[in-house]
Length: 493
Ligand code: UDP
Image (cartoon, rainbow, N blue to C red; front, side):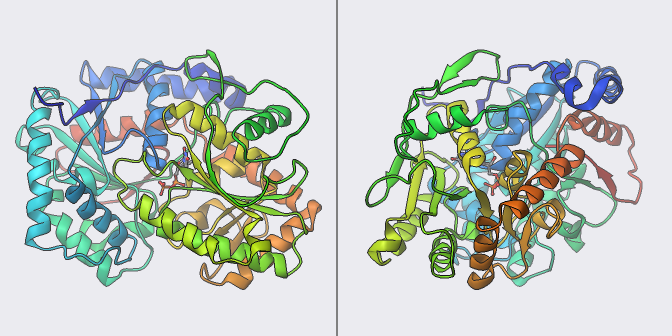
């Protein structure tokens, strides 16, 4: 028998009570009351989340962490991942790029693309028949799963579509993507977007909710990690040179057990790793052109010539290119970065480290990202487009000065000059290089930006509100005629 297309991702409940130390008793009891109300409302029904990868990228990251707290509160929420052919993921990556206003591989979103998309969708939908009950509730994430809406709706299942992508201005590419998606979306009970500006005109008719993504402060990605441990982890994965300490490389898994970082990273570099004392400029992201890894590299080289400290190094890190199932361009993009790196003068080449992090154990991978973000002198996110940059929030939570493009949700995340530095024109390498020099040469500024950043995340982007947001969705289902307005909610994933 062939392997099923639809896979259940196990969710291990986490005690939401962990948040008491951050929210205080009263903030927490509010969340607990919401959970009780939601469970009553659900009355045995389950909430399914469906996306197309269990690993890599912001959506998988949020589902892994925030669903666990909902389960900890006793809310029956589950997670399924669909599968598709490489052609299917070419089409959905094309849609992803188009929703960001980009051409991607330039392929046509035509009848053939619909056929590829529909065929994979139908095969996945057939399997869902045996898994999802007709009174369950389903939240579908991003273009990969939008095609399932009509199948679910035909069975009377309340289906919501959560779009994590978007752009502030309309564009021809985005319109083409919306035209492609429109026939699948009509029967969704409501849509959830990260920013108000992302709502396309077509959907602006009272069935939209706005919700900013949030992070889990206790996950292996974001949990407290002292300097010595971060350094030991980075030493072990060969990102930095010998430190002379043999501290343990431990982290706490989501189930509370203590684990050790044992795997190693795959690194493209020339010469030795940076000394443990060298200032590090770090970007962590998928190997995606919209994250502008080539720009990060070129701009860093310009910063060297503009007066960045003589030992500063750039670490560009991402998931191992073999690992992310729904991102067919990863390997290609990494190759482009390597080509660009090879073309650098030797002195610059020696200061750039291209790091592929192993993805075999996601929590171990997360601990590596945690160590990188904590150890960084500055974290950059030079995206050309961004729905909402989780990596930005993660670095801000760690008190890092973040230099990021003023695109998409990042404009909400960072207040320029207060909780980070925004690059007005993401393609302006001089401005980017100048910001790196400014932050690396000015520890006082770096510290102030970092402190404000952490405070901002504490106030706005830590998620336990998943429960109240699910409650909003369920309430919506109970009203046949939705109110003609757009709600702003918190952290629905
Ligand atoms: N990420 C990770 N391991 C990696 C590279 C990235 O866990 O090797 C995570 C990163 O920490 C963040 C997510 O992937 O949590 C990326 O989310 P973001 O919103 O920044 O970008 P997206 O990939 O969704 O476009």
